[in-house]
Image 1: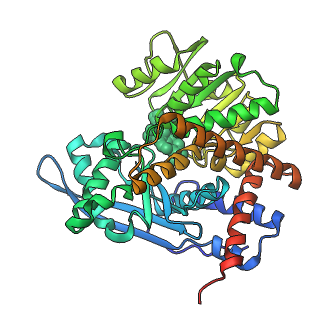
Image 2: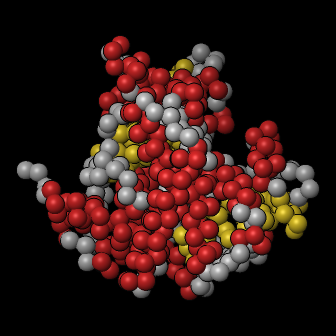
Image 3: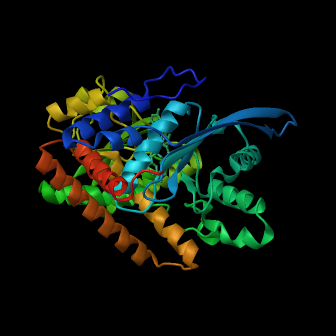
Length: 430
Ligand code: NAD
């Protein structure tokens, strides 16, 4: 099916992420026989905002930055999705990530739509003060295109709870005084003291660990003797590793932007997480050997958790993997060629929109707590998250069996089925 892609001045040289998501979408829509009118709606994004804004640097000069917010669909509720800072951010990437967010929220049955955003920049080039000014000015540039009942950003690559606190404060500062205390839920993933939720920081990694525990039960794999490797040791990768350790599994190799390391007897995920905070990456972690990218990918283990960027498992790299399952902590780590090779080789894939959905689920809990002026105990957050993840996992597993298809297609079918029902019930205005 021809999908209308809005024109943009952005020159796209990297592999198109939007092409990947549309390929996955078409495959799923064909298999389930998605209503052709709803297919047209779901293939398009609703709003695409691109802003150019100035920020003052420490030296006194001004730099101009480009930021994006793409709102894909809000049939199920307010737009929801992360904000990332990365030099590769462009409209194609943000559009793809926004569509995955719509489908992710639908798979886990939470009342949010999908959005994504980011600023094209390399944050390592800027001081903390400069980043704060960039974040505040971006928030100001977005203005009313975000809002606690309309579009709610959250952390993603190179952004964190501090970023969210600055956004919440800037957004509130632009509101009339009597409304300032009522818009804390304009972002989620905030620091606990500023209205964040217990369990949000680890939530995405927690979801990865919960889905892997279900997969292990289904495949009679004992996680107490299982081994795993992780790509990306930021929020998602480091938390997934620390939580897999609690299940008794052993971390054999890790790769991040600073390099790749391995230790045959295992790497302690907690101690490595502390090291990464102090040293900025995994390279040089004591007691490990440095390895190259190919050797990292060839590491024999039960589980691979990609938790860095997209398009890392491709036609070129999928043949190298020596694992039983890929648990997608990152968004879009496997491209269509990679998927085909993994399927042929009998390597299971727990797809991103299911596997890494823990973050948006606990973001939903944070949003609810802010709206109700409540604070939930960690045990309550984790218990509710577990129920949602397990239900979604079983729904996807059963759909895969019913349609005799892979799990990514099954997850898309679950999500699109829900959206199809909603559109059929309420119709299209006018
Ligand atoms: P992060 O910024 O905390 O960590 C990113 C990690 O990836 C870092 O360790 C970095 O060194 C590594 N990395 C970057 N480029 C790399 C490369 N070329 N090779 C190897 N490693 C590289 O980001 P995060 O929040 O952990 O997000 C990671 C992935 O998870 C992204 O795809 C993101 O969209 C997805 N995700 C994040 C959340 C969340 O709650 N933060 C939720 C769902 C999905």
